[in-house]
Amino acid sequence: MSEASENFIAKSTVRSADLDHRRKINFNISQYNAKVPEGKLQFANLDLARETAKNIKWRAIETLDQQLEAFELNFTKRAGKVIWAEDAAQAIDAIVEICKTAHCKTVVKSKSMVTEEIHLNAALEKNGIESIETDLGEYIQQLDGEPPYHIVTPAMHKSKEDVAKLFSAKLGTAPNLTPQQLTLVARDILRKKYTSAEVGVTGANFIISDIGAVAVTENEGNVRLSCAFPKIHIVVVGIEKMIPSLTDLGLFWPLLSTFGTGQQVTVYNSIITGPRQVNETDGPEEMYVILLDNGRTNILQNPKQRESLYCIRCGACLNACPVYKNIGGHSYGATYSGPIGSVITPNLQNLGEYKHMSYASSLCGACTQICAVKINLHELLLENRHESVEQGLTSFAERMAWKLWKMASLKRSMMNLGNGSIKTKVVNSVFKGWKQKRSDLDFSGKTFNELWKERNKS
Ligand code: SF4
Image 1 (cartoon, rainbow, N blue to C red):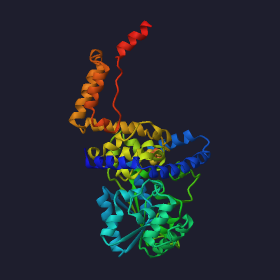
Image 2: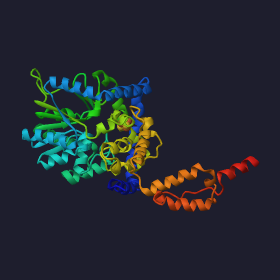
Image 3: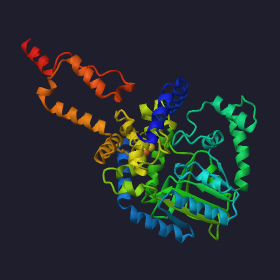
Image 4: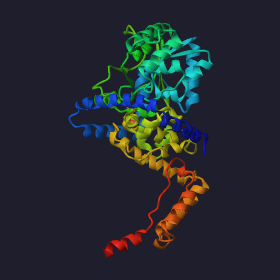
C-alpha cells in the first residue's frame, strides 16, 4: 500500500466519524443545492448547453497544440509574454526569477488551484517573498495553515464561528465578530497589500486562443485588484483550460457560475489580453502567462482519459459525491479532490501512488449526472482501476483472490461446491482486508441451482 493510500485511509476514517464536520458540510452543500436550481432556470435547454460545452472542449483538446500556438501568437502581439512549463519546477523557477528581477518582496495572489498544485506559496516563502491569498476563503485557509478544502469554496468546512475564532487567534480581533465584520477586517488588511505588492499572481478559468487572452471569474474583485495594482501580472494556468473563441464565453461563463455557485453569472468576469498598452491608463507594465503541463499531456495521450481535460473546475461533482460529503476534501491528500480529483490525480501524478483515489467511489454515477460538461466521471474511475490492474499495480493476494473468484464464477459445479456456511467462512477469511470496515459477506444457505429447482417445482 502506498504512503498516500495509507494517509487517505487514516484521514478518511477519522473524518467520516466526525459528526460536527458532517453537519457543517451538509449545511454548506444544502445552501448550494438550494441555489443551483434557480441558476439552471436561465438555460432554455440545459442538456443541450452541457452537450455543446462538451463539444467545444472536445474540439479545444483535440486541437490543443494548434490552439496553444494560436494563443501564444495572439497574446504576444500585445506585448504579453508566454512561458511554457513542462512541470511544477519549471513554473516555480520562472515565477521566482521574475520576482527576483523585480526585487519583489510581496506577491498578492488570487485563488488558483494550479498554484496549489505547484506549491507556489511555499516556494515563494523559501525565497523570502511574502505571498498573500486575496480570495477571502483562501485567506482564511492561509491564516489557518491549511490547503483549500474544495476547488470552489476553499473554507467550506468552517462555520462562521470557526472563522471568528481563527481571526481572533491570528489577528487579535474580538472572538464574536459577524461575517460582515470579519470581511471588513480582511478587506482592510488586503487593501494595503494590493497597493504595496510588486507582483500579482492569478490563475485563469479559460485561455482564449482566437484573441490571445485569459478569462478570470471571481466574486470578490480581488483578482482585478491583484492584477491592476502591481506592476507585474503573472497568470499560471493549466494548458487544458483552452477554449477556441471569445464567443464560447457566452456559454461557459453562465455554465461555470451556475454549476459552481448557483449564480446566473459570477460578479466579476475579466478578459485580460496583455499588459497596459501605450494608450491605456492602468494595468500592469508586464504580463506573463505560464502555460503549465505538469502531467496534462500524459492524460492527453490517453484517448480514454482525455475527456477529463474538459473539466471547467465548477466543483459540482464534489458537492454531489456521497464519498466527498463524508470524508471531506482534505482526506484525499491531493490538490484536486472529489470525483474529478480521483480521476485526474492518478494520471497527473503517479497511478501506483494514487490509484486508491479511484477506488474511493461507490460508482453511483451522481458525478457524471451532474457534470457541467458531461464528463463520464464514474467510467473514468473504472478506467483508472482497469489501468492499474493492467499495469500490475495490484497486490499478489488481490490478483489471486480475483483469479479464484473468476474461476469459481465461470463454473457452475464449483459454485455449487460446499454449503452456504462453508462459503461464508472461506470467502470472509480470504477477503480479510476488504471486510475490515465492512460487515461479513453472507452467502445464502442454498445455491442458485437449488433455489431455481425449488422454484420450478412449486
Ligand atoms: S468534472 Fe465536471 S462537475 Fe466536476 S468540477 Fe469538472 S466540470 Fe465540474
